[in-house]
Image 1 (spheres, rainbow, N blue to C red):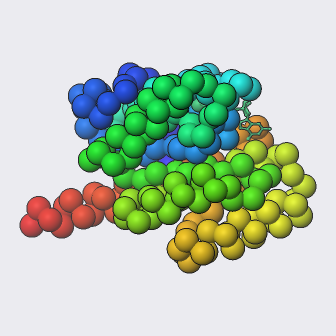
Image 2: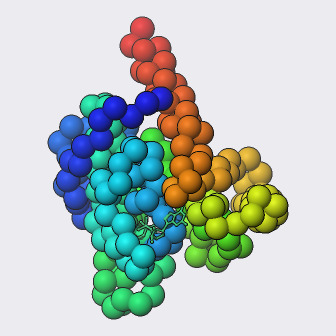
Image 3: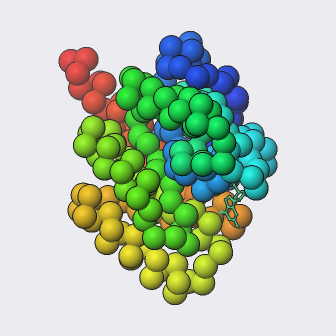
Length: 206
Ligand code: GTP
Ligand code: MG
């Protein structure tokens, strides 16, 4: 899969405000500062398509990027950012929940975890809720460039073991937006999912 065009199509706070053209959506979620926006830029081969910041809490709206004119990458605000008002935290939580539970076009949720840390309680409860709701998801480990190869392997195995207690078949993909690793694995997964959707649609037409 090659991304030829990536166009910002708008920001929303509610599912009904999404872009008018409906298409499969691949959305990125995870704690604030985990690297969601950076990963979208890396996948698209652009530096600042999605706004990034070293300060957590940068993305505060649901942002749609139309890819190759036919599907969306969706940048979501982070969860678990404590250094903001209770009201702002509640608004972000509502926005994320509204998107995750009501987007009919959500094809897959990529749940991002920092490869340097153990699975945190907030991630565990989010992943458990998504798994329980039967929403297709894949786990992505970010910032792998900050670890040695052996430390990354160790952490990835430990995270996978924790995820196994939620569900035993969760796919985990290590990535680095800085070093551009994991790009093909993520894009191939999206490509396979899009093709699978086409087959299902064609079969149900007969
Ligand atoms: P919010 O929108 O605040 O929820 O954050 P986000 O998850 O979108 O994170 P963002 O992409 O803005 O990145 C946060 C910080 O981490 C920035 O300073 C990035 O440069 C840095 N970062 C993101 N990905 C990587 C990576 O793969 N390697 C390294 N070394 N730094 C990264
Ligand atoms: Mg962001």
